[in-house]
Every structure is written in structure tokens, then in C-alpha cells.
Length: 170
Picture 1 (spheres, rainbow, N blue to C red):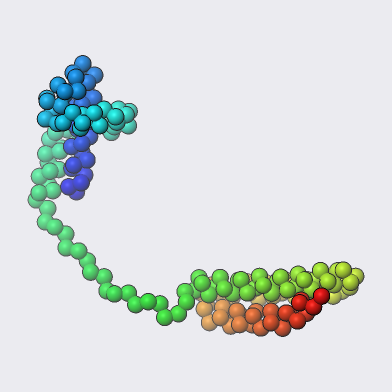
Picture 2 (cartoon, rainbow, N blue to C red):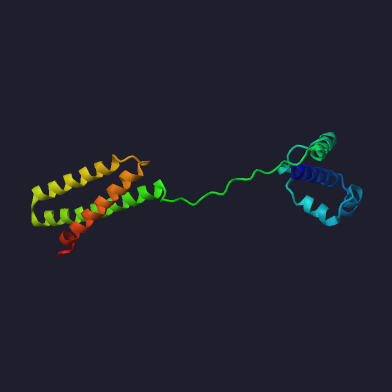
């Protein structure tokens, strides 16, 4: 609140400086009349007058200053110490599961390309169907169900390990 009162006083000074300068007063005369330093007046003149909000009345400033003086300090709130999370967050677990799915889909893409190059259209279609079905199974897992995500991640990693021999073969 005190900060807002100070800002209002600064705006009032800026208004006064611009008004006096527009009436032909020098920087020195303006500073003397307002009880400010010449550098303060010079800084006030650097403010674009079109960006200055409407002038607050002197009475409003006095009331605001009195209000600040009368307010009792607000007692701070002490928060309990937060214990570190015992398990990974749901978001991280979900992202790890999705990344494991991407890895397995990459394995399927290698197998699909090999089936296409071999001219085995039935095998290629079987791999496409398996890829789509696996994606649907992963998509069906609730993003807030961490145990299901962990189980699916384990299954996906096992699938990747099993397919590694197939995909690494040249």
C-alpha cells in the first residue's frame, strides 16, 4: 500500500513538472518551485505525457497516506514444511510411458519397412494393426492412474527388449 502511495506521489510530481515546463518555467525554476532536484525534474520530463494516467487529487493522496499509517501490519502466514514427493509425479510417469510407446512404435516401423521391402503385404498389415492396437491400449490408460502407467511402461520396455533382436538384425 505504501508503494502505491509513493507511486501516486511520483505521478503527481510528473504531472506538475510537465505542466510547469509547458508554461515556460526552466528546469531549475521548476525544481525550486516543487522542492525537487533538477535531476528529478529531468527524469520526470523523460516520461511521455500521453502515458501518464489521470491526475489524482491531492485530497485522495492525503487520504491514502493516512490510511497506510493507520493500517496495522498484516501477520504473515507460515506454511508447513512440504515433504518431498515420495514417488515420481503422475505427469513424469505418464510421459515416460508415452516415450516407451514411441520406442516400440519405432521398432514396429522398422519391421513394417522390412515387410514392405520383402513384398509381404500381409505381414506389413499385421504390424500396422498391432501398432494401432498398442496405441489404443496406451491411450485408454487414465492419466491419473500411476500404477497402470507403471505397469504399461514395464510391458512396453519388455516388448522393446524382445523386438530388439528382430530390429537389430540386418
